[in-house]
Structures are given as C-alpha cells and as structure tokens.
Length: 370
Length: 253
Image (cartoon, rainbow over all chains, first blue to last red; front, side, top):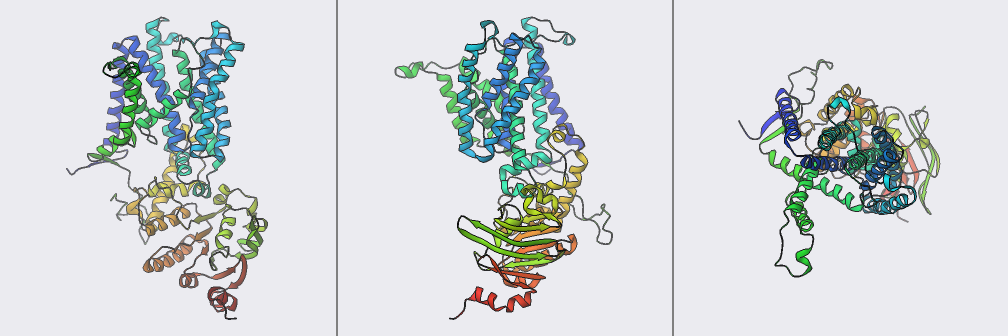
C-alpha cells in the first residue's frame, strides 16, 4: 500500500478509528478513577479546568481571531459568583453555575463591543486592562461585603445517584468525573460550532472581514456573540475552580491566569479542535513535574540559584517549543502524521450527465484529491 | 422597471468629490461595463452598491428595495454578490469552504441551532453539493480540498467568481476581473462571464480596464470621468463618443 494511507472521512474505517480512540480515552479515565490517589485525581481535575478555559479561548482567538487577555476575569467572576452565592446565600451550586455563565456571557458581550472597533494589539490592551482591574474590584468586594466565613470556595456534595459518599476521597472522585464531563461538553459545543455554517463564518471573519460581510455575515452580531459564548465557557472553568479551591482571594484570577490560558492554547495549537486540550494537559503536567523535580542549581551565583527554577525551565521549554512546533503540538503531530495517513473528505457530488441535467449518479470523474 | 437604478449618487471624502451626481440603470440579465480612466470613481460606485461606502446623497434602488437603507451583510440576501479586484478570499480555508461561505446568505442556522446541531445536516449537504458543482463549472473541482493560500492568481480569480455565485445572486458585481490575467486567460474569462450570465440568468456590472473585453461582452457601457458620467449606451456608440476618446487619449488644444 502506498504511503500515505488514505482514509475516507465518515467511512466505516474512519468510524472504527474514532470509536477506538474515544474508548481508549475513556479507558484511561476509568483506570485513573479506580486506581489513582485523590491527589492525582485533583491534579487531573485542575488540568481539565485549564483545558476548558483554553478551549473557550480557542473559540474566540483561534477561530474568530479576537484576542482576549481578559479570560481570567470571566473565570474569576464565575468563581466569585459561585463561592459567594453558595456560602453566603446558600444557593444550590448548580444554580450558581447557570447564573455564573449568564453573568459571564453578559460581560463577554459588553467586552465584545469595543472589540468591534479594535484589532490585534489594541484589543489585547483593552482586555489586558480588564484583567488588571479585576483583582482590585475583587479586593474591594471582599473588604466591604464579605465575612470571613464566606471567603471560601464551594464544596460540591456528590448527588446520591452517583453512589458516592460525602467524604474527601469520594468528593475528589466526583470532581474528577464532573470536570471530565464539563470538558467534553465544552469541547462538543466548540466542535459543533466549528463544523457548522456559523463556524465557517467565524473563520471567514478572522481571515477577511470585508469579504465575510459581503457574503452576508453580520459582523457586529457574530463577533459579540462569539465573545459572549467564549466568556460563558471560561465561566464554566471558573466555577469548576471554585469547587476545588479552599479559599478565594483577589489574586486567584490575575493576569497570570490569562497568560496561562494563552500558553496552554498555543502549546497545543490554536485553531485546532484538540489543540487546547492537549496543550492544557501538557502545560499543567510539565509545570507540575518541574515544580516537584526542580534541580538545585547551586553552581549559579547568589540569587539565581534560589530563584524559581521551575518557572524558568518552563519558560525555556515554551520558547524552544515555539521554534520546533510553531503550530503547536497538534499541528506538529498532524504534519508528521500526514506522511503516514490522511483523512480524505468525501468526494464532491459527481457531475450530472449532459443529456439529463437532473441525473446525479453518473460515472463522470468525481472530485478527486490531487 | 430597471433592476438596478442609480440616481444622482454623490460621494465625497472630506473635500474630495469622488462621485458627482451619477445616474444609470441596469436591466435584468444585462452585462453592463463601467469604464473610465483611473480615479474616475468606478470602484467608489462599486463600493456604494455593495454598501462598503456610504453615499453622501442620491438614491440606489435594487428590485424595489432602497439599497442605501440596507446594511452591508444583507445585500447578499437581496441577490447581490461581488468579486474583489485584489482578491479577498479566506486563505486558510479550502476552496470548497470558501465557496460554502459564499453561500452563507442562503442558510438559516444560527448559533443555537449550530451548537446543538438541530436540523443542520441536510442544509449542509445541499450547500456542499452546490459548492462542488460551482467549483466544477469553473474547473476548480480538482483543487476542492486544497487551501486557498498559495494558489496561482488566475485560479484564485476564478475562485472569487465561484464564491460569489454561491449566494445565488441575480446581480453580480465584478471589480476588474481581468486585471493580472494573461492574454489567453482574459479570452477565457469573457467566455466564462457570458456563460455564467446565461446559465444563472444574472445581470453583471463589470468594472474593467481591458477595453477589448468590455466592448466584447457588454450589452451597455457607462463611461465615467472625474466622478461623472460622460457617456452611456451600446459599446459601439460609447467607443466612438468624442468625450470618451478625449478622456482616454486626451485632446489637442
């Protein structure tokens, strides 16, 4: 068989590969759920939370071309909404998830308005300002309104139908599954959007606004609603973070959090569906590994040897990465994998016979991939 | 009544008058050539019709709609499509996807329906089939799954036409479709324009510098100079009009 092997999209073979892939991922999840320690599960939960935020940013930045450094603010708003409403007002946490998403959607629409007039670095600056203002707003809120007892994250009690008890081990297990389910839902939303009429219009807006408008894409509506949806999905990540944190303070969702989302996105590959998920897991576990195994650089003079070696190494890793795989991990793997196998889209409808313009099933040469 | 009726349209940018009381009309199924020296205001007129520029005064009506009241993203739904002089394609998308975006205005699925995939499959397949047919009629089907970036200029010009046709327009605006093409490509293009007019039953407004081509395929020609119309009529008449000759070649004092 000649290389690369051609696999037709949605053919039985393609479906079989998809099923195998998804089953393998599910098997890994089940393996961890039954064998891993609660602390490991907690780490995976954190990585999933980061992945949700990166996926939400990918919708906005990767597919629609609007940059946001303010996604930490959406996550922060959702986390504070959840933490405060659950602790101070004794809301149902699930209700707080809905409210947090709606609030984030609204704030996203609002931020989408200046985004209509600004592009690239200018939009980055405006969203950067929002990310900077957030800790100050949060601190004021904490000082004036909040009793110490309500400065907590929320504690999610596993529903009875799960058969899980309300203790530390089972709660970790519940959060692990919950974060996976929320990640799958977020991923599905972005995937469905990308592979639809609206998804094409988002990419068209990114590639050429004027042409997209002439084709009938309503620019203000499309851009603001995309900003809103992306913000609401970032809110899901923030809500999930509130379920993991013991305390909430104003520095939980600073500009550094936004940078982390961006790094995860670009590490995995922006404008690819799997990129942000792969990037988030890679970033989180590389960071974790370096933190626990950071070498002691005693040979370096003075403060350098005591500095944050792990962060430094992570920075170097990211820079090296940008050179090796500028399109991210997923882009890199795709480019290499293309030498082995390619997924070929289904052929175009064959040309109708000249004598009968309504006949479609003619043996005329179909659109063959070159 | 004419399909497109431009009445007394003026456009000025600051103190510079780009269009000065221009009037003309186009009938259904007609190919109209818009000619004039550089800076005559042809592209400005074009951008007024496709709602990229705002007219300072005047009226433009299309099939009874007041075009100047319609936002830019709604003209495709009325049946107006255009191509761009210097290419305005979506470089990261495949040729097929480019043409499918061209058919955006024929679809109805919004954010909610696309997120939940409610009744989207059939329309997607129909749009894909139609886009494939358009690629074939412009002899681009062998490149359907190739990204637009990096393809030859002449190929991308044909892609612009295929993308515009995907909106099922009744009126196609073409901004210098022959610019940058080789001699044989221009001949081919004339043939393409005439055949798409006949096949899709649409009217064409052609802004073009290539005189032989304009005169060869237009039913009527509007000649402009300094933002005003100097002649209008069948190609032969416009070609022999003294003011048109003077505008292009200059006059001896």
